[in-house]
Length: 118
Length: 108
Image (cartoon, rainbow over all chains, first blue to last red; front, side, top):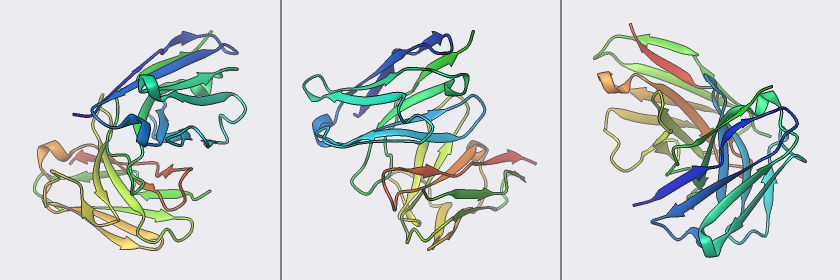
């Protein structure tokens, strides 16, 4: 079955950096574009970033553009989110998810919590 | 960027009653709309895609309708396990994806 395991979350001070990882299994990771979606405590879902299956194109929400970088290592079935210049408003659970062919998100990981606080 | 607006923010419904949730897109998205259910402490779960097609394993009491800019999710007879937050999401222009702000369905 499809599994997505995010890691790398934690507590970081404003202005700090963090790198999240997501290991996918149970599906052809290298054939799927991948999203990062986040959810601040008690708030709704916010799309963060997307990378094509081969890493050739990357897209970012305006709220993170210039601060976050998305990358992938298909040989390790791993997706990354490098976050710098973190702000308190970046505090959220971060989910990774493959994009289904139709454009929906059919599978989600359990998420990793990032807390930006002094 | 396409903005998605959901209403109401909170819906109070008694078990066994019908719930109707609305989602509006800031521009036409054809039928490229999905609905997700999220319970506390859990990741979202896909319910509906293509505005009206139930995802695998989703009970028939969940139905979706609409196209263009106006969409509806109907839960015909609320069960205890249906009390949750529901999000709509457009995938007409992807990426970026965009989600609605959510509707919380609570017990009346």
